[in-house]
Every structure is written in structure tokens, then in C-alpha cells.
Length: 399
Image (cartoon, rainbow, N blue to C red; front, side, top):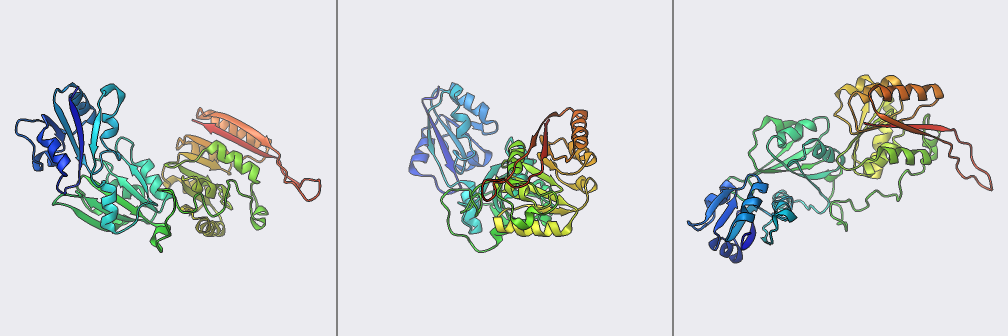
């Protein structure tokens, strides 16, 4: 094992005295091409390109001498420290960080970032990062080859966002570009870059500071609780779900950050709102244009970023991005169209026993495991009685 392992973060500014001293004493230096060419490294030191961090960790573990690994910005923030610290390598590290690329990007944009979500596409794919951008008004995306600004903008082509693309931060080639998302794919972008994706409520006045990083001041919203009681004017709407039924629906859907929920036949959209408050991206579909407009108003009231789509399922579903979880209120034809997109989990709300059997057959045809419950939840009325309640079927299938 190496006698000493130092991990240096570099943001392009002059190194600290401790960092330069570690480099001067190094017998092995691993870093990116730019770092190896521009830092003062002893001529006698072995050099290794920082491509696969796993290979670097093995080489460092086998090295006898003083090893230094140079990375961009803060190597402990979505960086090399996580891999180097794995128990199988047995390395003890001294970490000398610089300003992280995310902090630098927000500084270039002149924006606070304690209320921002930060996601990485390295080894994780782009779709879940795009879903976070749908669900939140301020997101920093650490890109990777094949998952850069253009690919991200194409995945968000149906929503309006502003992109701040920060290329080669901390180098002489640094460039910061601000564009609307529809114009981003028209450009060629250099790696590495950080993309700030801003939209929705973040366009307004700067809100007061919260107390938890990455969360709005009043997360999960101005009203405490989940599966909130439906306002009287919405409870009378056709297909409105009691709070107890919605609680089960939400539990079986399990929406989480990085997911995209389709709420097909959304109506009042109360499930869509709760899913958005849980951090999921939401597309609410309804054939009633007035219902979509009311849901847009409710989303602003609850501080939820969601997208409404006015149209009739299943035809309107064809152009929507791939869902992770789906809530379906339509018939078997609509359910089959949703199952054809292979979401991880689907919840259906049939109204009759005949529809229950149709739903079960639709799940079985595509080999989804199906379960269900019949709920009869009646609200407590004044006095000793209970209000009227209609029994509800809730069926769910998992891939």
C-alpha cells in the first residue's frame, strides 16, 4: 500500500502550500490530462491518467511511495474519494478540496444554491436526472459523455427551462452560456461541464433562506400531511377519491425523486399534487381542459412543479416521456396502452367487478404481478355517525 495518499481538488486557482508540498513529494501522480500538463509535478514521479477511478485505486494500493490523485473541484462531492475509500483498497486519505464545480457554476450565475437539487449522470443515466429537472425549479446537473446539455434539453423539450451551461470551469477555456432549453441542442458543448436548469417558481423573487439544503423553505408544502382532505368543491367532482383511498394509492405507487408519474384521467389532480410534493416529476392527463387549468392553479398554490396535458387517452399518451409509475382511471384500453410503456408499477381504479376482472386480465397479459383491495372508508360525521361512502377498488401491478 502507498505510504501516503493525498487527494487534491483543483479548480484552476494556485494550489495551497500543503497541496503543492504533497505534489513535490509524490512518486505517483494520477490526474486528468489538463491537470498533468499544467501542474508542477516532479519529473521522477510516475504519471497515470485519471480515467477509471477503480484502476487508479488499485494502482495506488499497490504503489510503494507517496501517491497523489488530482481531481476537479471538491473530490469528495460526486468525486473520486468515494471509490478510493472503498474497504477493499485499504487506503487512508488526506483530502485537500477546492471549490466544487457546482458551487463555481452557481457563483458564475450569481445565484444562491442551498435550495437547489444536485444530480449526477455519471454511471446513472440521464432520464432520472431529467425527471428531477421536471420536478424542481433549480437543479445542477453534473454531465458525462453522451449525457450532456443537448441530450438533457431534448429530454425536456416539452417543458420550458433556462439552461446555464458552464464549460471547462477553472481553465483558460472556461465559458458560461445562458440559453432557453429549446436552443441548447443547436450547440456543440465541450466536456467537462455543469448545467444549471432553472424554471418555474425559481424565475420569481429570491425566496428567504430555508434550513435544509436542497429543499424549499416549506417542504413538503404549505400544508402539513399527505393525502390531504379534498376541499368540498372538489369532493363533489366526478371520480373524486376519499383521502383514505388516496393514501393507499400513494403507498402502492411509491413516487420518489427521479421518478416520472403519469396520472391518467387526473381530474382534480390531488394524487398528482401529493406525488409532486414527494419529489417525483408528474404529468397529469385529462380530457377536460377546465380540469387541467384548475390543476395548474392548485400546483402553484402548493408549490409543485407539474405538467398538465389536455387530451384523450390512450391517443394522447403516445408522445409522453417514459413513465416509472402510472395511475390509471380509464378502462382496459387505456390501461393496456400504459402497460405497453413498461412502467415499474401501475395502480388502476376500476369501478365495477367486471372492470376488476378486465384489469386483472390486462396485467396478466404482460406478466405483471397484481394485487388489490376493496376499501370502504367513511368519514366521521357530527355526533356518533359516519358519512356515506362508496366502496372503492384499488388494484396495483408491478413489473
